[in-house]
Image (cartoon, rainbow, N blue to C red; front, top):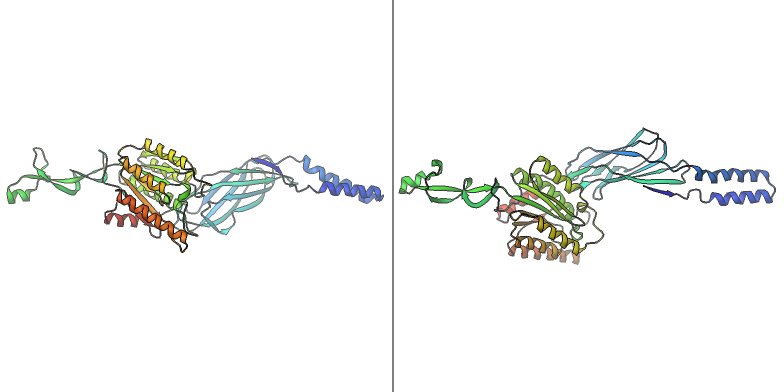
Length: 420
């Protein structure tokens, strides 16, 4: 909370002194009387106490999960819990940077008595991504307007604008528990794996009776086993990743929204899911399962400072290396990593390569936010293509995601082509 003088009455003292001097020198009682009245105005701002601000904010959105381009109405209610009237209350709501106000205004002024409330509303256009509202800025002035108090009032509000992802890009590596990841090992499952000699105790239903009738060979049919795995969704939120085309969401917005859509897709496939963020801070949620864990994962993606849609002022490679070291220390050896990154620099490529060298199955989901007619835009596209090619040559699966289409369709097509 910040108190400051507005300077509104700064010139009144000079005017008063001038009026008093003129009244005395010119022997004009009316002018002198006007100067005396002016003295009262000059003193008044200094005796009026600064306003005491004790307000709460209640923010409601008409649709918390809109489709891109939908108009969402935001309703804000401000309540004065203090014992004094706020004669000049001004509120500026914390609209996320990626959302444009399309109707009404996110600013409001009111006189608010103790216990009273005031409500205003405005509309925003939904953009792809997970958007957390910032704290509202509240400014209150005393009746004279000489002193104002500024504070921020936070209330958790999230707007999630993402399309559902029907399946996650999981690799054929898994742990011992049953799940939906098809492995390369024979056993019980639904996908044919091969045949082997019959062993006493094999279920009769898995014996190839046709082959036995035809050639007299007693063999058992094996299917590819389905097991569970731990999947860590790694979001690249470093400063170089805040890259995007003009008037379109940047790659971090796409990455956070994609991760939010992939969390339930992984969980519904009976696999454990965790979240990691490498950015201005290191964010981490260890792999887990269940509806509560899914809610925690999506809440982290919506509220963690590293997932902010506003770019950091600068990127520190040393901090990124420290975050990578911490991530490598936390990852289980069998964990798969889905790395959501535009591959905007060499560190993003190195991160995926080093995790793969550690023995993790790594899949890079790379939103393509390059494009444009400038030489710099074309160069960025060429550099990205080279990084994708090098990672694929090193055995890392890379899903080249054109952000003009849903991620789910891109994953399905990549699966059909054997990329993921």
